[in-house]
Length: 145
Image (cartoon, rainbow, N blue to C red; front, side, top):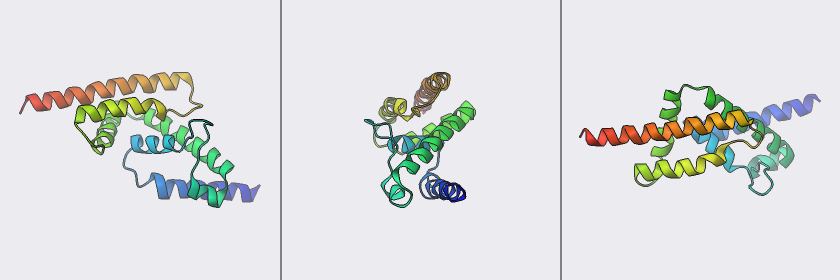
């Protein structure tokens, strides 16, 4: 039991320190974690971590981490979420409005599979508001120049 707990803790540390901490925003972390989920099975796959800890443990820990990042994002004030989304979008290639639209298309896939419906609805609502804010602020910034 103790060995299982220590392995779980080490896996969580490795995931966080090596893969999540280098990312600047919660949106980047959320997108990254969602990218580890296989569409066909819903399992989280990370080759490097699985080689050390095993596929099943990686799936469990990454799934729990994905849920926690998702819930923490929703706990943030909208202003903080807006700044994080703006930062995430600014790292994408292309025109700003196109990048925001692409981000919005991808963002539905960032929701953890076991997320309660009310959190998914809150996330969707927040995302729509954030997209409008980003586009509105960008349009106003251009027109004031």
